[in-house]
Amino acid sequence: MNLVREAFLYQNRFNAQTIVFKIEYPVTEAAGFPYLMKDIGLLAKSGIRVVIVPGAAEYIDVVLANHKRSSAFVQGERRTVHDEIPYVEMAAFHAATRFITGLSAAHVDALIGNFVRARGRGVVNGIDMENTGSVDKIFTQALTRILDFGMVPILPCIGWSPTGKPYNVSSNEIAVAVSAALGAIKLVIVTAGGAFTANDFTAPDSVEYSEDGRILHLSPEEAALVLHMNEGGGGAPVATNQILISRKPPATIKERSLEALRLALEVSKAGVERVHIVNGWEEGVILSELFSNFGAGTMVYADEYEAIRGIRTSDIPDMLRLMEPLMQKGILRRRNAEDIQKKKDDFVVFVIDGTVHGCAALHRWGEGQAEIAALVAGPAYSERGIGRRLVRYLIEKAKRAAMRRVFVLTVSTQDWFETLGFSEAAVETLPDAKRKHYDYQRKSKIFALSLAPLRLD
Ligand SMILES: CC(C)(COP(=O)(O)OP(=O)(O)OC[C@H]1O[C@@H](n2cnc3c(N)ncnc32)[C@H](O)[C@@H]1OP(=O)(O)O)[C@@H](O)C(=O)NCCC(=O)NCCS
Image 1 (cartoon, helix red, strand yellow):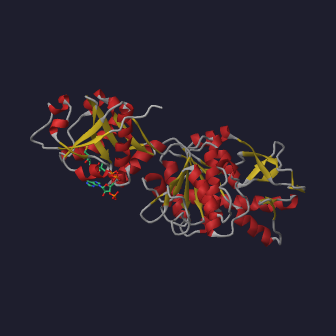
Image 2 (image 1 turned 180 degrees about the vertical axis):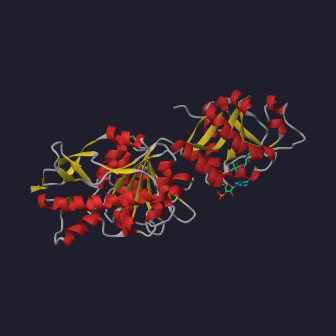
């Protein structure tokens, strides 16, 4: 039931938004590829604007090898010479056609198109890169029109100059450019590499894992550290704005995952707030990643993913949804929307990825005392530090308001408050205004914490 609820919440948020998928070529050969396309088709049909950027590097190598050729790489970048561009085009369009086939089976209209204007890379390290290009411009208007029709545009790794000269452009670079140009809310990288698990990757201590040991999410700084810790290079970590996507197909599964992480960083620098890396060999991975709180992959987020903030009127229904079961059990005092609205400035919410998952209030009662009340950490994230962080936040707020003591009335969480430094206190210690309201039938216990005066230097 919770899963269904989560899915609805996310579905509402994604409706009419653009999500770009960069899908690596080996994934198109996986047995589960038709199911992956069905899932992407479902997203397109449900009103999400879907764009696909197929990777083709491995297939370009196959086609070239079939014609007894192979590419040279200059600084990690494929050099496509004049007489090889027809093979590269063939491979790029073949890779794109696989998506047309998959989406046809899902009854979704799709279109492979010339949405990228390219310019030649010119001469790199004294070597003429010939038909290797980079993105000059994304034809946003054309893409928007196609998306407005509910169709899925597919962008092969080819771009054309204004005079119609074809260039081989890295699909990673296209994924970055198209995500930024369309203001996508997400880029999903469907990688042929493995998941980011605690077993396979070292990560900084701040990183949070799922129960099965997968890294849940990374800030850009953490992502840069993961790259540094797993690439085997010594020295200082590379600044997030210096990481460049390499273009050569990675040799190992681990390298593939790191390559995806590098791409994720590049895209988050370009202003895309969420980049998800999912394992293309795992069935159902896209829907689980997008529509459940703990996902199925690893997310790199550019904006603030978790935050405690003051409440907005629109948060009140979500807060009441969290409080209701506890009010029914008598753990929390009953409050309605009006009660919360009246004391709006006292409340804060804990928001994860735009959804309210916790709340609490700090009510001032005079005599330098404030009460922590209505504290809830939602079941989806229970025992993950939300409760503790809300209490600490309110303690800081109380200190800033020059309070000398905070207290809480509780019937079931005395041990928990003790672990946060609170100790039991008598009813007589409550400020007068509060003591008048104390319910002697309910017999709540009082736990209090003395606050050291805040130094204002
Ligand atoms: C109490 C509550 C806010 C804790 O929030 P949370 O985010 O789940 O908890 P945290 O992650 O901050 O802390 C988890 C730790 O507290 C412990 N804990 C949780 N509830 C506890 C309780 N009722 N009594 C004692 N310990 C408790 C957990 O075992 C865990 O211990 P660990 O860190 O040693 O593993 C949450 O359980 C809740 O919403 N409870 C119902 C509402 C309520 O009682 N509010 C307080 C009245 S104002």
